[in-house]
Length: 146
Image (tube, rainbow, N blue to C red):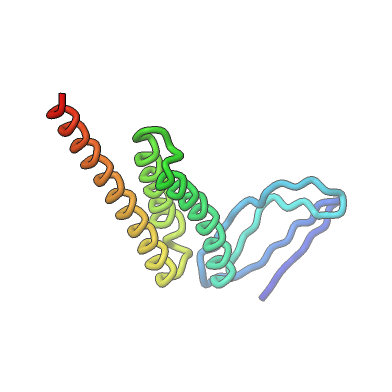
């Protein structure tokens, strides 16, 4: 591994050179502290490190999706607004996996994550259909009894 680090005033520029793989580039969260070096951009070449970072990013978004599903199944969402919101969030996460992370994430993790999303989507759709059937039966029942 080759690397170069340049220091100018209080900022440091570091470069790592690999030629085998396409690098993953991201901007870290900005934290202002006098004891920490300012970093504007990370360029990663190590596939295991990239895989771990993307997995953590995915898990953070997946936990938010699970919170939404939990609220949905416990009737915390008003009316029918929860089902489209959860399905939209799930489709966003799926598109991020297939478009952004496709080049960097290992195939096994991609399959695992997509399987998790498929399961969530199927459960939400099933719950939505059950609710619609229940509502239609209640409407028929109320209509007949009048």
